[in-house]
Length: 346
Ligand code: ATP
Ligand code: MG
Image (cartoon, rainbow, N blue to C red; front, side, top):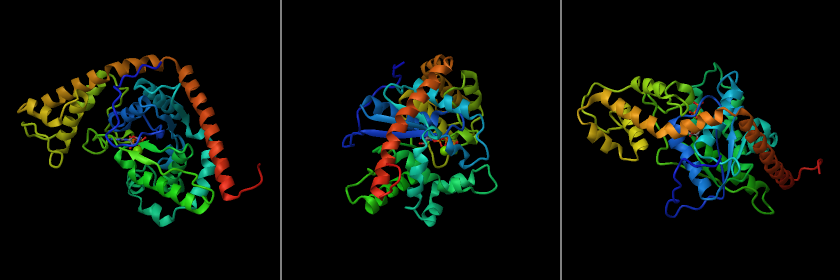
């Protein structure tokens, strides 16, 4: 089960080599092309370069912006299937559910004391997620979400975090928490490294409505969708009446998003795809995008179907991941308690 479907790439010139990498997703629905081009490819690339990967299925984060976690087990297992189908190796990567690692929530308490309410209210991603929230009132969990995420990142002392653009403000919080913890309690040396965000060449893929492709905004093309569904989703994408196809993200976001998708799947520049389509209009553009996406995802989808047939294996991956993540989190919590001078359990 270790075949990688993505080509390993060399690190960018001058980029530090990652040793430990933490990344993850909320089990709010199936992963989509935004995840694939935004972070999944980078995860597999880092794995090929020998980094130790921790991948969190962020199940408690589902209830930051909704009242209940709908179909949680199904979505969580779906994420694991997507990870393995795109090339993560469960023998090398630690894939675990947040709720299976209680020490993460113990780390949250001292971390909460290191940030101010004003800092949390200014966080642009929190503001954006509140705007898209399905709840009438903002919960305390939503408000403290970035600190929660800091615990997810810092428990394993990750030095790199492959993320999409929307996560940059959260990563800043994790860096602040690490720095302040070290300043306040690091008399005998720093406990946490300051993690760096790793953006891909596609830090923000647009969805079929011209805004950020998101699991929960009804604008995504899931990796798991079949070819006909993919065609239908792309046919419904928002474009304009202009017949000439040009790549112009500022004035034609719908067309530009589609061109970007075709280009990513074909490994070419969006301008080149536009040039080729010429006066073909939106229908021809959508046909090209559909063919490119379906062709690119065909091997991943075939592998997905094989993996989905063995749920026992997927649950075993999560169990083994939880065991390893718990050992690492308990050790870090021990260091935190020692640094803070806590007594009582040793
Ligand atoms: P939800 O709508 O439930 O918040 P989501 O689609 O935003 O789901 P997340 O689980 O919140 O997905 O994000 C997981 C990771 O994928 C994050 O690192 C995020 O930055 C990245 N990501 C999500 N959507 C995109 C996108 N459209 N382009 C690039 N990266 C993305
Ligand atoms: Mg999100």
